[in-house]
Image (cartoon, rainbow, N blue to C red):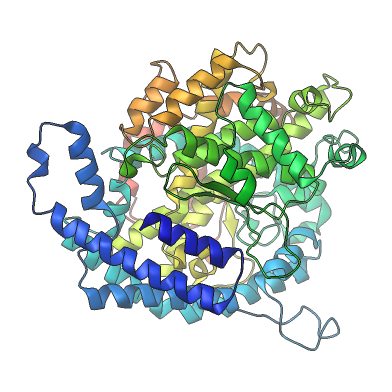
Length: 605
């Protein structure tokens, strides 16, 4: 069944026709029925009493997966609602900023609005794109989303959980997941606030000072991304040393005659240099690595496991650029993971937890992106140990990773609260912005109300895709990177480490990957760190960015670290927000009291 469904999904993704879509949807429906039957059989056994822990683990995976307990008509309704919300999202169109640009309201999120948010430096044009997208999607999906919450909760309760949020957290198999995640964010938040203060000061220089207060949150539409989830597109506005840009090896790749096929060979050689498995024959024969001229395809890069221990493919419309070379290494790390755990039972052929696949792929990326690696593969002639270039590089990485941390944290904090409280029907939008102001220091650029539904403008929320895995994966990637660098014998700062050609790092990677999901992820993390820890830990991430952190403290000596909000921003008094700033900047003294925030409003606290 897995092979059949995956094959039909591939056929549709590589040839976007309605017949292919129908065949795929029909097969997915059969797969859902199989999962329901498997669940119904599994719960009839007293499997928790079995003596074989591996059998118990497989039964537990069957029993906890999906929503098979939901009556068939209810499950069909839930799937229909999710698809309707996705269709609204995918088909939404907005009008151009100026009628003179086009008489038609036909701008879509990709690529039109995304390009505007990334490249426009007009306050008003970015505001138009930001507001128009939310107005086009949010109100239309709001009532459907409330019904989705009801059905998801019903399914979770039938499976023995309090709500759908608890069911999502159960996939990680640890009782203290929320406290681990909160502790990590508490540790990383001071670095984020330093980055926030520096970016705010640079934005004030670019836009009129009255647009952005030196002590206030940043308007959410000015950070180069529709959701302000990463800020890498505003690098040109905030680069510490503009004359010291990181080398882009794209021109050198073109000069050397790189092709998509050669780029794939280069990525494959990275893994074989570690002593890992080469890509199999089917990979070379069946992968899609260039955009076909004769049919429409979904070009978003992805890695595919066809479940038969032989067939593995990537789908990526590769262009000869440095960015695509990095993406290629990421996707082929997924393939390497598939290859390493191929001999596990079917239910164990997966990442150690829902975040592990991305974490390992991103950890490999931390090596590949270094100037040292580009030099070793012949794409960079000179490596200069230059402090200013280093700070620029770390700033670029921080705009991508550190800026993303609070967003990746709050999406499911909000979603779990919605599930726990049955939809928050009278305060769903204000709850969203409370979290964004508190953790991200961002405010909506125009007034929002409960008539709006701004969370619905984020695909993962309306597509029923859990988000905390991105936060966990971001933290784990630095833990895994540090562990690989340590066994590779790296000397120097963590951000300069490249594990290329290290057989020791390859052996550790093989150990981590080959276990698949056959063991609890804390055990695999303890194995990866050679016994140092079995929990999420922000220390390697902070170590990676330590040079930038020290530089930011000096650069921000005249800036306020943190933000003060007004009644208009969050409905809280200035006095309470000053208390927030004091707590945030002296966090260790207030840790015993932070549990007060869990079930009380900020004003009660």
